Length: 250
Image (cartoon, rainbow, N blue to C red; front, top):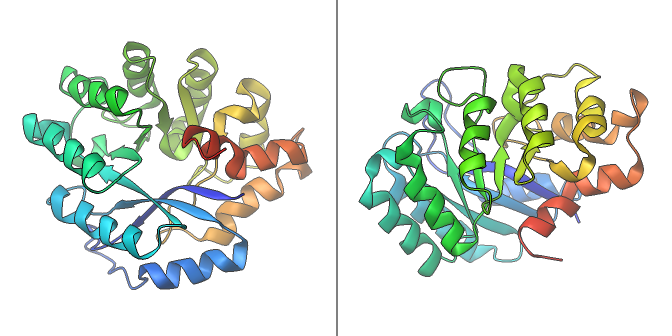
């Protein structure tokens, strides 16, 4: 089974490019690459969480066998964010959370995130964080948060981008941290190094579709063995086996 652990849909917050790929077109693209399921969250991370989550719910309702809906929340919303999680889980059946510290301007290990993490623990939800080499979503901050909430599965999105070394170190140190491969720099040694340092069982594949090219993002995993010790079993874990475990699909 191949599972995209990190993709988006809906009205884009990226003002420089309108999203012209709807859910049905995205699924047709997935069909070309054998992708079975996708963990889908809304793009509306900067101005309307509730509307974005409704969009994802409607898509998941049309494609229940393919779409695994993730809710977006902003911890600055305080009680409202917690109520939105309740609604998304209890009414919409969502299976995970997505937060974007950089866009929403909160430091990942800030105390305002703790109540959201407690909700995630209550419902057994994995939490996917956007991560990059900045002052908000750096892997070190996400690791500090994960250390406070060891019963919550934390996914460091983009493997920290150019802070990928710190992301790998965090996954190696903390049992509840996973890394996703979306948009990680394309240097050939990065994925083999991550597998060697923290194990293939700590890595999940994602495309960041429809922003990034699914073919390119998948090729990083499928051809990783050309450049390092990555086995076929490792690839299967990364491409879907690990996320199936997190989502309790197997």
